[in-house]
Image 1 (cartoon, one colour):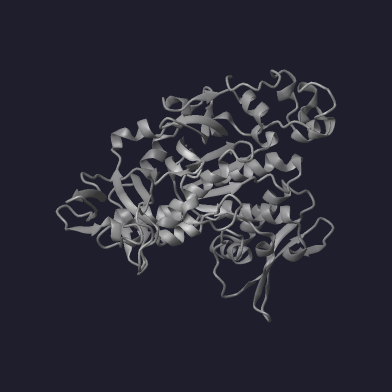
Image 2 (image 1 turned 135 degrees about the vertical axis):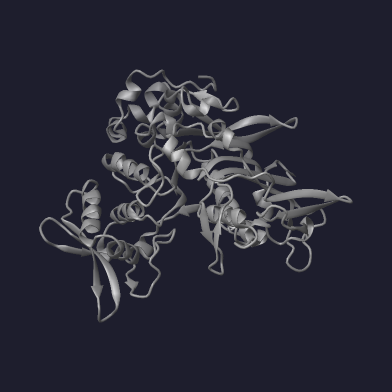
Length: 495
C-alpha cells in the first residue's frame, strides 16, 4: 500500500508530495498533471522489475505514445532538468515469493524507498548502460513509533497490528560515496550479514529489481509490492475474449482472462455464492440482469461469460456493452482475494450513464481495503486511485478522498515555470501534514466546471455561460444542489 509519494523533476511534477489513503480521487482539468502522477507510479513500478531503459520506454509521452527517455525529465522552455527523484513510503506484504519459488518473510513491513536518476552527462554508453544512470538508491525502515505520524488517515488498532510487523536497526539498501564515485550497498536482513557493493554508474537496472528471498527478504517484499502497482486500462476487446481451459486465471490490467478469473473464484469458493454475488452486484448497476455465469464448452475447451436477462435471454460476453463489461471486471476484482496492491484507473466515468456513476464509485471504494478491520482473505490490502475531471464524480466522493490537481505557474530555483500542484480539501486528514494546503470543495467544483464555448461570443456574462447552468448538463451532473448556492466563478487563485 502506497501511503506517500514524493516526485521531483518528472514531467510536470516539479515537486509533488502526495499522501494517499485506501481510496483516492485526483480531480483536475485536462493537462493538470493527473495522468503524469499515474505515469510516475507506473515508472517506479516498472523499475522494480525492468532495466531502467525499458522502464523509461514503457511510460507514455504527452501524446500517449512511447516516449523518448529525455521527455520524462521536467523541462521549462529549452532547459531540461538533469535529475529526477522518487520517494515512496509504503506498507509491504509480510511474505512474498521470489522468481525461483523461494518464500521471503519481511523483517519489517513499513518502509521508505528512494531513487534518484540522472541523465548521463556523456550520453548513452555502450552495452546495457542507457542514457539514464542511478545516483542514489535507498530502502529503509520507518520506526513503529512513527506510524501514526506518517499514516494520517483514520485506522483501527486491529488494522495497524495486522499490517505493521518487525524490527530493524539498519537500512536494507543504501548509497555511499568512495573516491568520488557512488556505491549502492545491499545489506542482508540477517544481523552481521555481508554487504554487497555495486558501482552505481554501471548499473543497468535498480538494485531492488535484482534481490532474492534468501539474502534480501524485506527488499523482495518491497519489490513485489511495487510490482503490484497497476494502471488498469480495461479494453473491451480483451474483456470480450473467451478463455481456453489452460489459460492463466488472473485477470490482466487490460481485462484479459476475465472468464478464467471468475471461473477460478467459483471453484475456490462456493460456486452458487460467487455467481449470486456477481449477479447481485451487476444488477445494482444494470437492472435487466437475472444471472451471471461462466459457460464451459468442453468440445472447444473454452470458457465464456454469459449474462442472462430477466426475460431468459442469454448474452455472451461478445455481445455485451463496453460499460457492462467494465462493471463486470471491477466486480470480479472486488471479490478476488488474490488481487492485491495498488490499482490506478483513469476517468472511470467514461462510457457510464450519469445515473450509474454513484454505483460505480461504490464498487471502486468496495475494492479498497477497509482500514477499520484487520487484513485477511476477506479484506486484502488493496488500494484504489482514480482520476477525473467530472463534477458528477467529485460530487459523489467524500472530501477525505479528494485531491485537486492544477497546472499552475510557480517559481522554482528562480525560474518561472508551469507545474502540477496538488491540494487537499479543507478540514480533512491531509491537512494534518503542514506541507499540504487545503481548498474548499466548492472551489474544486467551480474549477472543473467549464464554459460553454457555443455562447462565448453571445455577449452574456461568464456566469450565464457556465455549462452547469445549461438544463441538459445540470440534469446529468446529479448534483445541481451543490451549485445553487455556491459563489460564482472566480478567476483568481484564492479560496
